Length: 430
Image (tube, rainbow, N blue to C red; front, top):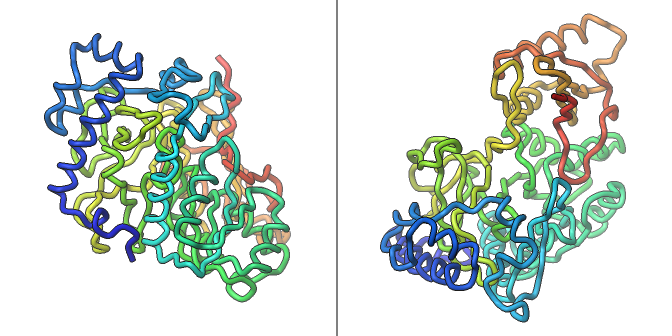
């Protein structure tokens, strides 16, 4: 199942020749039209003609999200405003937002990448995709929407929230495919349970695409088991089109990153130097086809690795692992570096744990994990709760090397997330 078989299965040699050709074009475009890059090239004493091989990409400067914010709103635009047809921005809740511009060709190319992703998971024209991501300035919903329409599936632009209405839409229009955040999928499951619905009998669901926030393999298994569907991992970020940068095929063994559109590097986040294939590091991406806003060596802050070897699906574009964490999500407790996903992996592997949890940091050495458990455990027998609390505490200690305080809560106690979840509450002050 291919959307663009020729390019999806292109030989590595031909793919790298194409990458080099497009990299040279992108570098020339950025140097000529974006003062930020021209200034940085001058500081580094480099010129576009110095890019003669793919390895020469390491001569180029990194771009950070702080750079995008500093040059907000139009400083990173490479074309005249008349050529721009769409703007997306980040929320700007922590300062200036990031502005991302699309030309008409950029919109169409992003949709083509989504079409590749959907078809490689088995989507056909008779599918119904319920898009439960946020429409608007966030790229997640619109880019998926355009790609799905390109394939020819029926799209329900539901957006997030209003869960009972979501369920009614799924039943009335026989939704087969969900595009949803993992935290909202877990909440949707809890509502279905409360309503006494059986996903296998009462719905026509076949698959879900999960993205916008990191999640563990254990969470995937939990969602697949409850809904009786296939769950595929989707990776993207607004700075690089939104969803569709990398996606799982039906092998579910890593996400194919579309290397004809992006050059990926994995670097040591501290030194900025490349790490060998198969080792964890920060993902750095360079756009190869963006017209309105090319970006060179963008530091995503996402931790992943390039998976060695070829995928049995036949695609030649290399795969990255699921996102292990973010360099800016890492928390330090008692001097130990901890990613929230490590905690999620443990919790979602415990059968008595329900769908929701929260990590609360109150001092340098105090971490509390608040977790909802299935209501059957509240049966009046204290020893059941004590045993479960001890089991979770010990498993967490084994994973993160410190012993957190664990609070067991009834289902529905913690705040519900219908979009990106907030798992870590940091109350620490200097």
